[in-house]
Image (cartoon, helix red, strand yellow):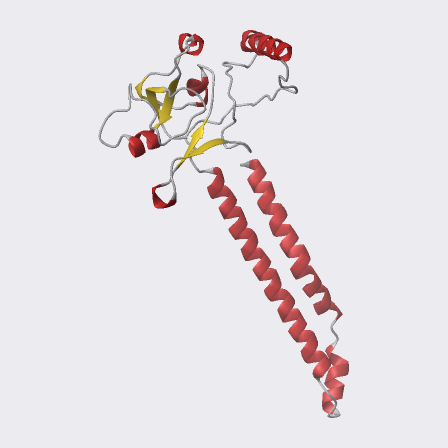
Length: 231
């Protein structure tokens, strides 16, 4: 709230400084006496009219800037109030500096992640830690197009740790989330969103069903074990 208040004050200040201040300066410098004398002698009044028009244009521009600033602040406040589907309060993303390239690197990388999952929860202020391949609303996504034209749909994929759903605050609507046993098993499982469940299983529960063939996957077709709220 403090950030938005400072932004609003700064925007309004810039609008006033860029618009009303020059207009006020021109008003202070205006001297009507010489032009009145010219008018009395029948001289031209074009400089006075031009100056008046410029001042009016400057004032109109200032008002436009103020209106645009108010609309920008209102849009920013509305965007901040949008429900993104999970609780982002206190969430922090840590991106490793290196990624595995060779099999030996993969072993060291896995050991580093395991150590982080063990040590980070003991850090003061940290309540939970999990792994995720993709950050919600991040720059990268793994998607799969299920068809062409109006029947097409885009499905987003993510591989996460077992505590991911509880950590980000996604509500479990039915079934269960996966466990460490599922991760160690060779049989792939999946937790789907409420929207995906409604789209592909509108009249039945998706629990125990395989992901439809319309959704291309790079591994064996996972079994749906749970449904969570939309993010």
